[in-house]
Length: 368
Length: 101
Image 1 (cartoon, chains in turn orange, brown):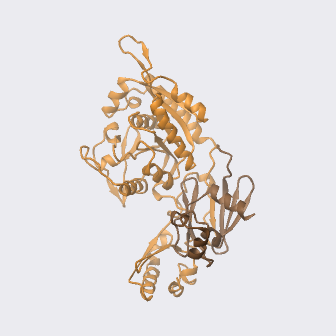
Image 2: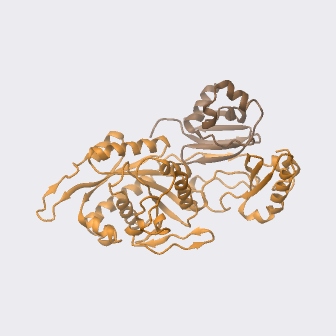
Image 3: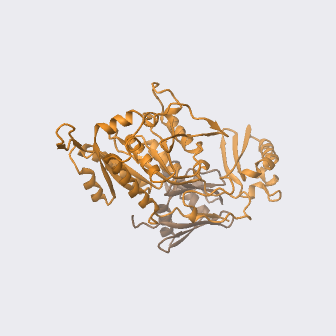
């Protein structure tokens, strides 16, 4: 730290060690890693400072190697997410002062909503895809991030197979049914298994979140892998989530896990925006008789008990399954059909609750 | 929504030595960087007893050089001694404030 006192900071006068521009300093086995925070536009001018700091650290006795990197906060002028109305004006006096970080790629995204389930097989991805398309039909600009790294299903659901392009270091999402889609499944072969250890999963998720050119979106739907584990927590910690929607079948066995899902989001202060009951009932195509295969209304009761909004019931229907497998989900295939209406109603409820001011915005963080 | 206090503003002043948190119930909590460093909720430090903490982290003066927001529920400050693994939730900040009174 003392060595840096001799190096001029971003403004050319104040010593670097006192300029407040140091984003992080780590020391490991004689190696020093230092991050200096500069505005993106000033990165080129800051290069001599970076070099000077690196040389100064290398000269310190006992230091085997020093690596100094420049990092920038979000590009100047881009709107801070998630709520531009709470934006505070950029302080021109605080040159390169550290600001709260929001991944640049989601800076233009108004809401991020996670679709989760306590357990697998409840139709979460199908629901996420249909809901995303329904939201797009309601006029919202929608992105879908398929974060189910072990069983990515968005490529199949949206009938996508080409590889996304990379522009300026950002992945360009593909477009289908009015929704921008990115999935780990677009980057690997459909048949190849994903055998990943925990840390790899988390870095993949972080990349999907930070290195995709989403552009301006009203809502980014994140299709979560089932369960309550590392991936869910990583997402909850690295993205400013507006809330989570839990998908469950009505049977008790599934509801137990749905409860766990709600509890996990509660721990990280992410509000549960609601519960969707999938495979709610079955209308026999031959006799039109109705069977409640997994019982019925369980999710509604659970929602009432927890004080969480109940968003709707989606029936078990062969048409939903067939259209989903064919890459043309029911809301896109039959936008005026009964099933599409259910999803449209859910979408409208979601829009209303996201635009309600009830959600408490994250605090304003001011430095200096 | 729970009735827990929710911060509306977090302000770092005195060259990173004072963190002032304003809560929506009107409470204002002022925490020094030294105190926050000593009370770090990071896992490495949680294993330590109070006296070990004091000995290891000590009374040396530290400054906060950066604050990163963690999701919707916490902040992660970086101290100039290199420590940056403590995640301070809103509830924990409020608790530290109550202890200070």
